[in-house]
Amino acid sequence: MTQLHCYVPEEVAQQAQRRAAQSGLSLSRYLADLVKRDALASAPWPEGYFKLFGKWGGAPLERVPQLPQEERLQFK
Image 1 (tube, rainbow, N blue to C red):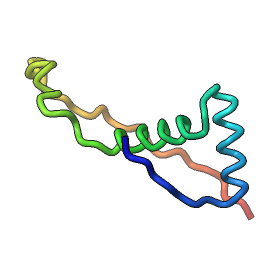
Image 2 (cartoon, rainbow, N blue to C red):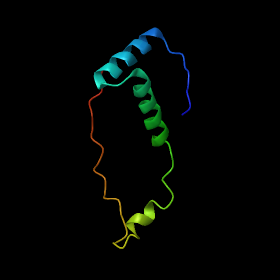
Image 3 (cartoon, rainbow, N blue to C red):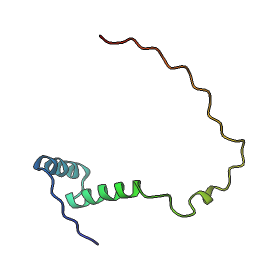
Image 4 (cartoon, rainbow, N blue to C red):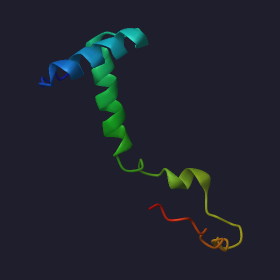
């Protein structure tokens, strides 16, 4: 497993330590989970993902008409 090093302000480190403790995790595990979650969130869809659900066989999708924009009072 790769080991990473980073520098953060003291206040950020303290908050991360508190959150890790609240989660019942070591700081290392807590940070690793955050990095993993962020990396996976920006990853593309896995190959073949949409084939799992088959082709759309229903009617063409259409956007419903939008309601008129509401009028709001202006603050002075």
